[in-house]
Length: 140
Image (cartoon, rainbow, N blue to C red; front, side, top):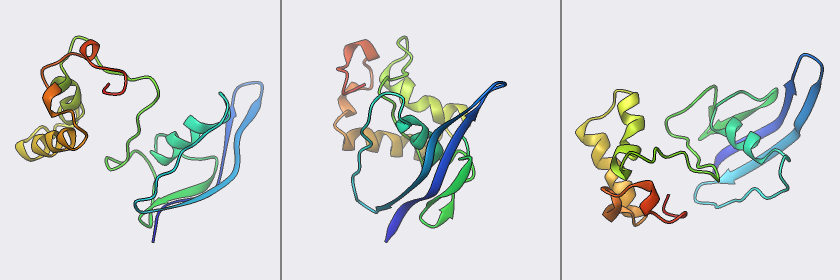
């Protein structure tokens, strides 16, 4: 079954003087549990594709569906980590990972428990009281 579907995605960035085509007619199907990577030189559109999938902005043309549902904007079930982390260095790991829940006014026992469960799943449960500078690049 197709989990993620990109259908003829194109993205053009417009300025007052020009239009720059960043992506043209990109189609992709990802099955549940499948692992994929986007590889390419700087400026080829990798981050643009990820931003469109995450619903941060709509494609100029085409569509994205997740489990058959059209992605029309930011979705709390979609996230991605950029190459550079954007952790607050003065906050602990715990404070950083709970910040999104706090900002969305969803900081409750169930969500906190789920968050800590995910940290345990990736081997970071022992880092809650550490600061970003105390972590390796991969842990960050």
